[in-house]
Image 1 (cartoon, rainbow, N blue to C red):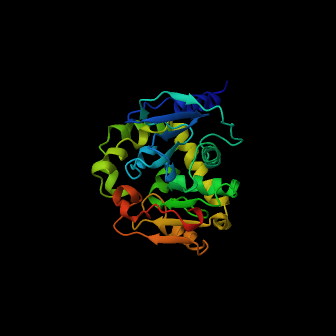
Image 2 (cartoon, one colour):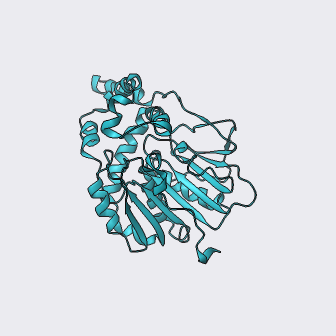
Image 3 (cartoon, rainbow, N blue to C red):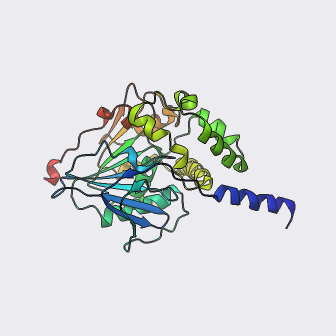
Length: 311
């Protein structure tokens, strides 16, 4: 084996080394292992009035949504994207016998969209369904709707600071990513682990305190390895570039929330994409918010309602 081949093999090995999980929350419900992804279904009381299926963003975990949808009559179904740690303590992980392996690469938007489709088909029990995705999770939802428009035709789609077709990453993180070779990622993650959140949070995340600080402190420990981060970034950019805004036509009712200040995605390109959607999709420019709208001010989220057509 030549020196270059050995160096490449060593880099792949380093990128595949496990990242130790540091964040979990108590959870009451079922946790399904679906290939390299997971689906957690929280226990609820009685017959659910609403089903909420939530998809977390890049580097995040599903705890992003749990306080927002804490009501006991909500059937809350939480996706853990492929090659991320499932952030629960309590129930054992159960292999999902209903799971079919997606025909897409792991850690891609398309792979996780297949997990969402199966969760919608197999686990949602109420007719009144909201699909809520943050950041990369928004792209996952749009891809799922594009793959199976019939399945989501009656669902309410909520896209929060989402990855959208023809959008772009913000120039600041884009420059950092473009100037970092793959072999630097394990080193960078070790450095970030030792760096206090306050050192870089203001530049990228805005004010961090309370629940927001609690979750963002563990961002770089949520993926299972550095390779997942690289594959996620590549998939996000590829999906945005290749996907047409025609994808919006499959949504019958939905809301797109655009933050006032976004240092993760390019706000201008996302807003332009959102505004190209049909009139039945509301586009809301929020104020006083960063990329993490729910953690900054959850009052921007539309209330859960039951449309007349489903009553």
